[in-house]
Amino acid sequence: MDDGRHGAVRNGNDAPAADEERQVCGATSELPLTLALAAVHITEEDQDALDLIDPTLRCTLGPHRGRHRDLVLDTDGEDSAVWTSWRNGELPTSVEILKNCGASNGLAAGSDDVCTHYSGHPDEHSWALFDPVLAYIDEHMPGALLRAAAPFLLSQLVCSNPRRPPDAEPRGARSDLSRRPAPDDDPVVPG
Image 1 (cartoon, rainbow, N blue to C red):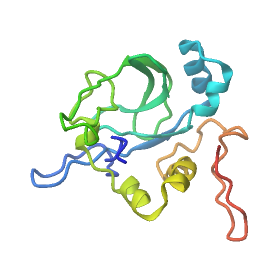
Image 2: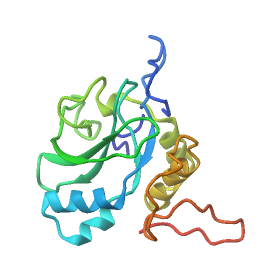
Image 3: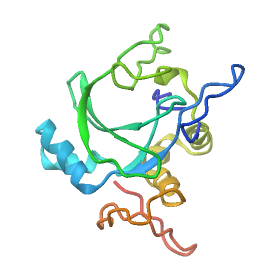
Image 4: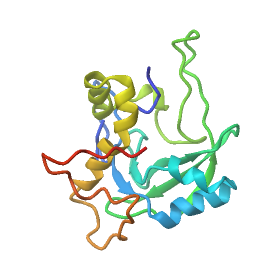
């Protein structure tokens, strides 16, 4: 099942040629714990909502210039969500509630898809973008394992990101994903 967030790893600065498939930007960063707490606060959610927030950020917009964006926390039953933004090589410094785009691809029920970006986003809708990283994971992992392992796998992209600022905020135990497991370690998948 396509969740509309599939799209390619790009640095966000160069657009594809006209005959290339449109791919997501894919720029990565990490969400500081203070912003995760702020997201819960501005939505007036229970503290348990922190468990729903993945500190690994990945820009799902199409190729673009400027600030990258990722969804931080979906607000159940609302037509909005909490988003953050950042520049290349920087951590985000704020979160904000943005109205959902909600545009539909217009296909028949079962094949339809709604854009998972925010209202007024630049470029293509989420369902029109391709993400080779997530496509590879979808193709090579069973669905249940994928849902459990996706946050961990995406965090490895951030941890291996050479553009991560060396003076980035230290990560707490919950979001410390910088140590890759040794071959004999049991991988720990966030729940």
